[in-house]
Image 1 (spheres, rainbow, N blue to C red):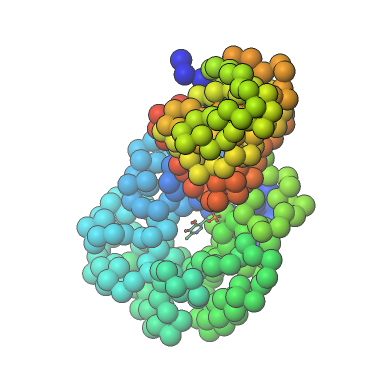
Image 2: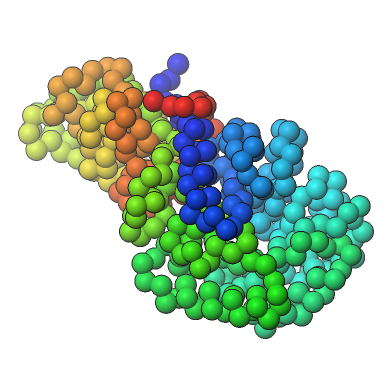
Length: 366
Ligand SMILES: Cc1ncc(COP(=O)(O)O)c(C=O)c1O
């Protein structure tokens, strides 16, 4: 079998979720498992967390239904609400919670007769300028929903544009607008994503919505003592499948981007962009070979990538190669660090691992 496997440490997932809960002890933490739990497998992650979480959050009804059909019983909230009015019948049938962010969704909800009232998170645009009612529209929409027989447990929801940044002026602007609105409506709040959960206690509200931190990625511009306790959930591991000796000056791979500056040993690893490994990885992008840091040398191909192992004499065919996550010897290569070398973010690397890569689940992983 091809050696590339995404090992998923469900013990680390539970640890990271508990960390989110400890960061926001007055708030309830809904675990965000949209996009197949950021590439980790939504159903497996939901099963691992279900005993601890008050609710899960997903992007759309398809994701929610596959969790219900998989046996998940706790509340599931649709973060973008319904995409068509006829989804309300399914929301009612499966007991989902919904967000509403636009007028047609409100109208559809108020024209619908559910078997029981639906918990609703009313989304307000406090500065992200993506989804939600404007601060001016919000009071009127709130009044229409708060007494409607179709609606229960109405909350104000909003999303932060800059909670990951050290500099807090725009965050504070969003927060002030939301606090003023919530006080005027006497509304409970659902605000904080991972960075706000980790860095901005003022934003914890009644519910918080951690996503990427559950998977062990640090979303903050600057790590702190809490983010240093996060554990990687996905470890993308492969092996060396071939070795090459190169003379000084010889190139490697497409376009010959990397050239040996000395006599070098190059390892060919079974992982490429056809697996979701980012082909923007530059020369020098770290990997772990037998738990030792080495660097990518040459362009990533569809099924392979090449690594300079000149300084790892014990590297042989079959040696373990970690693309991110933890090695068998416990050394960790953070996905956030790999993402910086690829000029991207951990979210795209984690959600980008393709179905071709088998996921293997562990309750405690070493
Ligand atoms: C509305 C909403 N809430 C929460 C989250 C979780 O964000 P994060 O993964 O940064 O914690 C997201 C993710 O994009 C989101 O769109």
